[in-house]
Length: 169
Image (cartoon, rainbow, N blue to C red; front, side, top):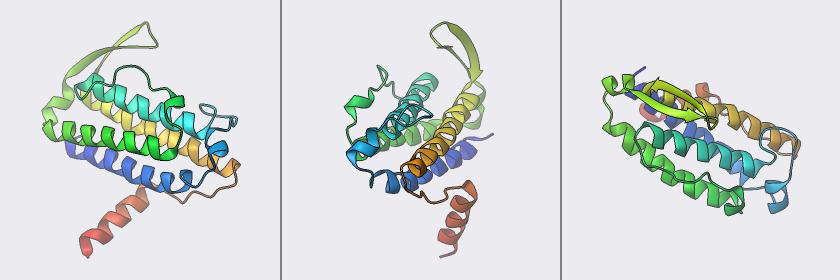
């Protein structure tokens, strides 16, 4: 995997987030925070979990440190999550722009689950962050359907098709 591949994966993720937030922003405050079986209990909590995790992975690999785990109660609206995510996106894109392909092989030591020490290459940790978002976007899509909404399809194939159309115009 190259830095350019990672940039594409994260770009896709932010594109898909935009599609998802178009629907999430239409939720009522009660729907946004309603406990629904699955994932992290609500649309808000699931989105904050993904945002918090992306920020922690960025900090682990050498980008901007986040600090304490984000608290869903600090995000009363979809817009508040989207604004913070935009800041994380900016930091992540800046960090990726500083990397060379050989940097992706550098091992990072970290602790997961409070006690388990691991060591993995930067590239694999960034792939984890990107794929973690894919996993939870699917969960949020399901939660939205359970709440009566129909999120549009945000498969990576559609992202690529849109990129090709933009290049052709």
